[in-house]
Image (cartoon, rainbow, N blue to C red; front, side, top):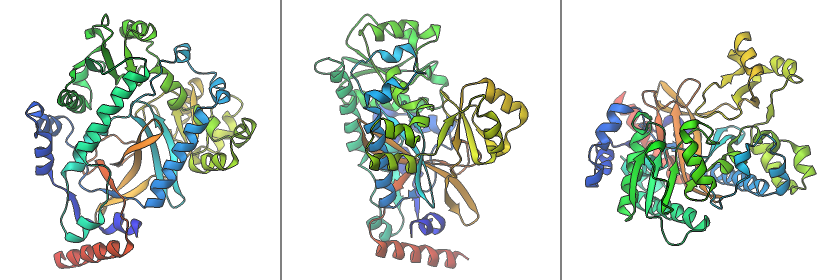
Length: 425
């Protein structure tokens, strides 16, 4: 039924005028809709993704299993590749952990974890703007929390980070920080976060690292940098303030080292290693079945991995945004030499799901779980074509995830969609 909805149902669509109204609902958000249309016109997909409740539950089980193993001292001691800064534990958990899944015939498979997953607030606004064009869908769709409830949960999450870092009350200032923020693709979301914090009574700004005032311990930094260990010279002052405890930084280098380094997946999918650590067998099965099998590329494994390359995907260990990632079946000898010279992992290729956005047009799909402290806050899909989720495919972009609860209503919607298609024909 769910597969058929994603193939044949085009009767739930994005009301772009409602999206504009949602973006401009607050006076401080004026111009956001124009900015998105100019900078990233394919940020939002026209149609939602339908997922079954068992698949949603299966993803949550994988996330709980990962969290259980990450908490083990033996796991943390095994991360020999973690940078020295990761040894510093600031107390905070890290906001917006992103668990990304491909969902195929065998169910959900985790392909990577990110510690500064973008798009959460954009998806909250998107959910507010989504509409149903037939009565059956109005009753069928049971999406995530309403946008205003999500925003409140997000604000409370940042306050929880503040208090977990040993501070009392609420931060006086919040800075959304990235290098050259206006040049970043998701700059519109940075502005939305600043507006969200201001509505909650917090002073908020979007800043580059060099614009920060780090002499005031009332500052919380929402970190959108991709320099995960704060190694770059431009981030030296922020690194020093973070290590000295003068600033609360979230997400932080320790969170990235524990979760998002792709070499970690080689441990989480190693049944022998999990057994040696004493991981509960049921949790170990959840991990080995629910995560795409991953191993480090080494000189010893090079010949074997080259022979098996058509079934593999190669990713840089600390990469992000699919940069320098390669589908094995398309890799050349020249690129293979670059993989061997770098620090890469080889991951079992798991085909993405499919969502049709028209009778003749299909999109690839991945599903992101936005997670805080082990709990899923929001589900969102990304529709795309090509090798990566680049948010530049016409008809693609972020899409809300709907989980129908009654098969009878699913059948009604499909019948309605088919009759509408027949009438148009």
